[in-house]
Structures are given as C-alpha cells and as structure tokens.
Amino acid sequence: MTTGRLLDLAKPYYEDANLAVLRQAGIGKRVLDVGCGRGRLGAELKRRGNTVHGIEMDPDAAAVAATRLDLVHRGDATDFARLPPEIRSGGYDAIVLADVLEHIPDSLGFLRKVCELLRPEGRAIVSLPNVAVWPVRLSLALGDFTYADSGILDRTHLRFFTRATANRLLADAGLRVVASDLNPCIVRAALPAIKAVLNGHGGAGAPSDPAAIIDSPAYRAYARWIEPVEAAIARLRPELLAFQIVLVGVRAA
Image 1: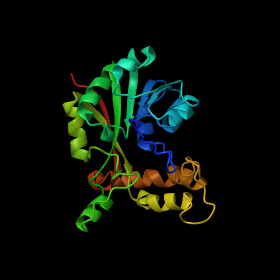
Image 2: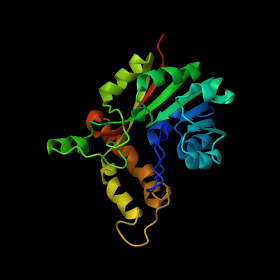
Image 3: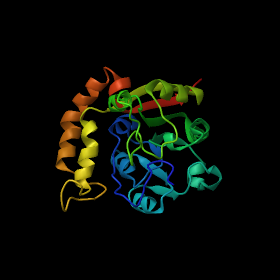
C-alpha cells in the first residue's frame, strides 16, 4: 500500500498534477513530496526551479518517480526511522502532502511528525479531498454512498474531510493557515466518464496510458483557459464546489 497516491496495478493508474498545489509551492525551494506516486507533480515542481525529494511505497511508481525527481525513497513515509539521512535531516522549505492524509489512520500524528522536517519558516502544503462536494451530497440525498476505485470515495480512504475539518486538522497539528486554494469540481464531475473512455470502456482501442488525460491537448486547453474560471466560481462556495481543499500552513508562534 502506498502512503499517498495509491496505485493498484490491477487497474489503470491516472497521473495528475494538482494545479492548486503548484500555485502554492513557489520556485527555487527545497521540497519534499510525500506519497509522490510516479512523480508527475514533483516533475512539475522541478520545472519551476525547485529541488524535489519524494517518498513513495509502491516500487513501480517509485521507480518511475526516481527518473523524474532529485531523490526518491521507496518506503513507508510513516516509518521515520527508515528514511534516508538526506530526508531525515529535514530543512525543507515546503512539504507537499497531496491526497495523502486521508490514507493514514493517525493523520494528525503523522502531520505533526512530518512537519518536523520543515525549516522554521517552512510551509506544509496539504491537499485533501472534500467529501462535502456537490456530487457526493447529491448521492447522499438519493440514499447512495458507494465506494469507488478512485476519487473522493476511493475505497482506500480511511478518513474523510470537509473544508472546516481540514482547517481544524492543521490547527490541531500546530499549524497556522496562511493561504488556501482549491481544485474545482464543476467540469471535473465528468472525469469518471472520461476515464472510462480512456480505459477502453467507451470504445475499442482506447488508451490506458497513465498520463493519457494530463498530456492530452484537451486537458492542456482546460488547464490554461477553463480551470482558472472554474476555480474562481468554486471559490464563491468552496465547501460545495471544491473537489480538493488545499491549505498552506506554517508553524504557529
């Protein structure tokens, strides 16, 4: 089991680059990407001039990430004693926990511990799925709470968060939230259907490349032209329209 972006080798794995995290990460920083998966997000961070280390449990995902990032440790991020000295020594300007904490039984304890690897002025960038988003609310109103292979109701999620409880998590970990962002769920509500098509369920010969969505011309056009407008709309009602809640925390004085 991978600590962050879980990879089930029995089904297609779709890479993603968390746009809200990228907006908050900055440039020229020393960054630790916990649960780095295949390193797609970390590679985007590197392109922005950051030095990026990653931790990933899945061996195949870690092998791909190692070709993209500056350093990748294959292992359990919660096992601090086994982290390599380069990571355990800390001094990170930013630690990215993108879709990680919902997979960890003691998410609060882990967040407190991993933040010890930050510089005194360093920032924890936390992305959490928003269980109060409108498609989930609609399903609940219709009496349905069905787990899925991915997404907010991923069957591997051990904890569920709303915008309010995400803020409370950081506060309980001794972090002061200095910025917030989101990834919207308006156009994204159609993503399950898009994945089904790319996985071949919508037609013979459809691609199952993990990067099929994010590398497509349609996604690049979406990220450049549509997502900024969609995100602006979602910020009017983030508790309802955010797919992912992204919070930036620093150690409270």
